[in-house]
Structures are given as structure tokens and as C-alpha cells.
Image 1 (spheres, rainbow, N blue to C red):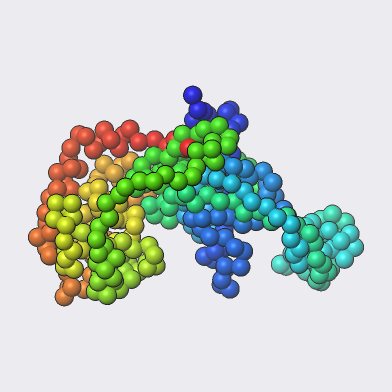
Image 2: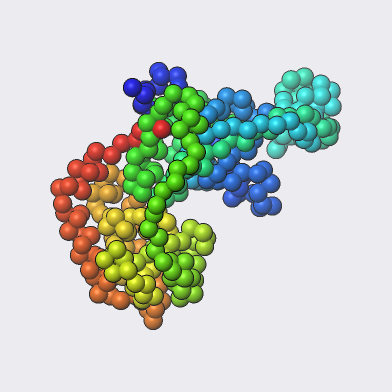
Length: 341
């Protein structure tokens, strides 16, 4: 039987919080990270050689935590990079900048104080950890301060910081919401690659779905009806009725919703009240995932002259509230737990 993520003694997998500069650097993404696909770093970063296939990466920046994924593979290659060195001992990683004293820099290795580091070129090993096929975006961006009690140590400098598995599992479970439901069972190291690849399948595709989405983008702009302005790539065209039973596209029968919100809407865990034109989230869902509470009571970001058909909103709201009152929903949510594969 595969060890579970809640078993810290299994020794099979590490949990890491990785700092990404994709969104926070004003000069753009200079480090190669693509959140949701791969994480890039080099051998000068503490713990860089510890990240391995099967580990869990939780991506963060200065203000928010975005989601998590399981490392499928780690690629590496040699490269040379520009760096700054202490003018006495020539080490590149042991000096620190002082904000209130001069000279501006001091080397913790030899004690040298200096105004500017010496520019040097150093050989490094570059790493790229791929996790895209398992990436799960948190239902709502989580404040980065919430990781404080999840770190395995008090060191705050590392771009790659180890997380305590016992704390990391419920943390991920809390913030990922129900769009993914449960995370996975941990298998033996290497299992991810052994069971990868592709399989031929037959699927039914909604015809003209792309055109339907384009019409809604023209009608509403790049705006989620619940969460406001969003990147175009994050928006789905949501039908307010069951497309399976009535396979037609009506511009006044749809809304643009962020992908995770769309998942909740289709699952009837979030609806739009036709009277107040505000979002409503299933109370049992908020009890189980308090981080989703911010989605409740948000005014519909749709101009009054472009509202969808209110009778469709009314029907969805009625069906959703009926589901919220059911014992089956509470039993389902109570049984959800984080298992990582």
C-alpha cells in the first residue's frame, strides 16, 4: 500500500515552498518561471539539489500563494552567470547588504566591508522542475503569511523552503477548494514517470464553444461576472442551463466566469441570486473551506443592460439551494481529504 501524505515518516516525498518572480518583478519574468508549468532555479539557491521527482511544490511570491503541483521531472544543465563577490575572499554568497550603515556591504565569511561587490562570472547548474500535469490553482489566492506555521524551519531567506508535511497537507487541502476536491495518493519514487504518457480516447466536444466564448468576451470584456477583471486565459464561457439537455449557445444564457468559479457554478456550489444579483456560496462549502467565503455576496460585475436571462439565473439558484440543503452534499464534503499522488 502506498504511503499517504500524512505519514511524515515515509521518507518518500518532500514538500517545498518555492518563491516565484513571474508576477512580482516589475521588469517582467526574467527568471524563466512559468507558474503552473515549471519552476527554474540554480545551484546557488539553498536546497536546490534536494528537490526531486515526486516532491510537492507550493508556489508563492511576496504576497500570495498560488497553488501546488507534484514534480514530474527535474532537468539540469551547466551555465555561467554574472554575480558579485567579496573583494577579499572572493566568495559570492556570503556578503549582505546593510541598509543603515556604510560601507554598504559586509562579508560574513571574512568580515570585509566594501561599497560594491566585485563583478565575476561563476559556473552554476541550472535546474527546471516540471509539475504542470498535476498543477492545482488554489480556489482563491492565499495570503503568504499563512505559510508561517507550515515551514519546517524559521529560516526566512530561502527561495526554496522546506515545509512540514504534517502541516502542509491540511494547508493545501484548505486552500485548493473543491474544484479539484482531493489531492492524490503518494506512490513510490519514480511512479509518476512510469505511469505517464498518453492514451487514445474518444470524447464529445461542444461544437462552437470557442465562438460562444468569443461572443461573451465581446459582450462583457475580460471580466469574470463574480471576481471582476481577469486574464483572458483564466475565463470560461459558462452556460446558465444544462447544455447536455439543451445543446444550444445563447449569448444571453451565459456568463464569463473564472475557471475555478465556473467549476463551483457547474457543481451548484455557487450561484447568482436573481433578486440581489449577488453571488451565493453553499454554506456547507464555506464551513469546509473557509477560504472560499470571500466569493459569497459579491455583486455581479455585469452591466444592467447586458444581464443574462433572469429566469435562467432563478432556475440555477433554486437547484443550487436544493442541493445545499441535502444531506448528501454535507456527507460528500465531510469525506473530502488531501491525499497526494
